[in-house]
Length: 297
Image: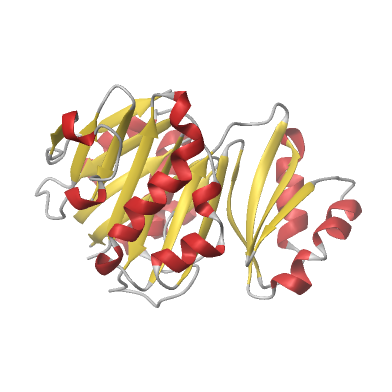
């Protein structure tokens, strides 16, 4: 099962509504994945700044240490706390130093994602509750992806929830299962990639990050995935400027897309799209198997 939603805005006037529209799409897919949920929102980058999204099982204790931890590293940052998550804005040229300082605060601190534009929020529980906890409906942005999870191959945990982010401003949501993820994980570890979970979807995210580190575009990395990944999968992937979709060669998992002159939308089922503006006149289609779809600002 699992449900995926994605929304890429062409019309900047819709950007204040991104969080609300994407939230409605995700909540509609609750019965495909009631275990946990997550959303990645790409907002407008601040010149010279980068963002790190943190999660903690002990937020009151750990988040109080963010300021002192940055200070010890000779850094300053702005902190926005949302329930179990915090978004820390730091100078872009000190992003790696800030990541290291924040990760060292506590074993309970986890970095959900980092980059110029991305914020990631994910937790166990119903999608509507996750959306509410992090005030997703009030968020604006240019594009975003979301996932409702029904766990089949790993535990229901915050870290096991999607999206998975393994590179700057990159993330992935996945419906399906990979059969060669253990072999791929070993190869990616040899290349220097690190993993937080045993989840096969994290391997898919890391694979795309590794391919893009070789100089490939997201579209080219997705093309390589058709050859290198075995199993059933529908991926929706986000980057700082782009939004991509790929289904396996059998197209085992459901998917539907819609495009107007204002947006491109993806859903595991059409009902996730019915509330979007102008959907009645949109071009609606089922993405073809083993075919890369990609849009970029």
